[in-house]
Image 1 (cartoon, rainbow, N blue to C red):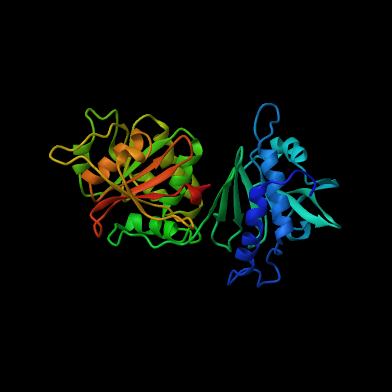
Image 2: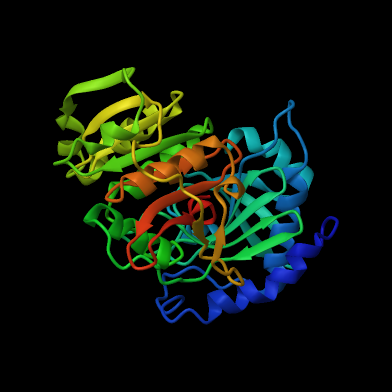
Amino acid sequence: MNGPSYPAARAVAERIQTRLATNNVAFKDPGDAPKPDAVVIEEVISAAFWASLRREEGKPPKISLAFVPPEQAGRPLMFAKRLRLAPEVLTRLAPAVEGPGVHIGVWWYGDHLCIWGTTHNVPTWCFVLEVVAPGLLVVKYRRPEPLTKFANVAVLEGASIKFLKPQDPVISEQSSVLSSLLAFYASAGHQESDNILVRVAISMRNHGRGGTLLVVPRDSESWKDSVGHPIPYLVTPASPATADLADEPEATRSVANALGGPTAVDGATVINDHLELLAFGVKIVQRDGRPRVERVLVTEPVEGSVEEVVVPSQLGNTRHLSAAQFVNDQREAIALVASQDGRFTVFAWSAARQIVHAHRLEALLL
């Protein structure tokens, strides 16, 4: 090791090696990325962790490392002299490689790991480690085309370790707009949904301000019974351009940002299940005649997690409380809530369990 050990890296290295090596599809094609062993995984994670706690010009690094030789990286940017993999080197390099889709290329040379350059392209099943925030790392791999989002394997935050696992959703009756989002959830992020809501969720989380997105049926106005009036930013007519763009694959990201962006404004954003923007800056209120929500079922697609029924006050801030109440009152709607601290939860009514179900998604969206 070139630097100090990180105990969590040693604890997870062999499990990650086994998870990747035993994948039924991975590493079968000659063009697939090479398999990292536990030594490589531990050293990459340790170097990235200690780098994440450092600062360059007062800012923590946000970087992505890919274990891949340069000949397997499409059109790489190669350094004339390789750099040793060390926390201080990663921290100094970070400002140059923080753009979207940029990976620091790492490979084994002789008896040590080195940084050979950068790349925007990595092969299928490539082992990738992303530094999201100080002490917060995500282990990923590159999925086959045409899927674009990397699959998360594990999340490390200090001494906390979470391995993602598929989990069957409790909800058996759901709208089509929720089905593909739950497929993404139930597969622990390995099945990329064709629904724009996955991208909207990522956009909401990325703007870092926190926010709430309410998805309501297109043919119903009952959602207005659960919000305060007057509505500050009511869109008339409902924005059809956004829905039209959603059918064009190349416009997916811009549409997601168009829907996720208004959630940064104080109050909730409302769209319908045809992805038409209806309003934003909305205050959620308890619907007349409806009981106050008293319990919520909480699940997370993480190994070792168990479903819990909790009182709403345990969910988090007022965004979570109001979202749970909205779904309790408007049972054909769903609510997506992003917190400033990075948590992300989808609320939906479970007809099978007769309870508001909170799906925690943050481990999938990092």
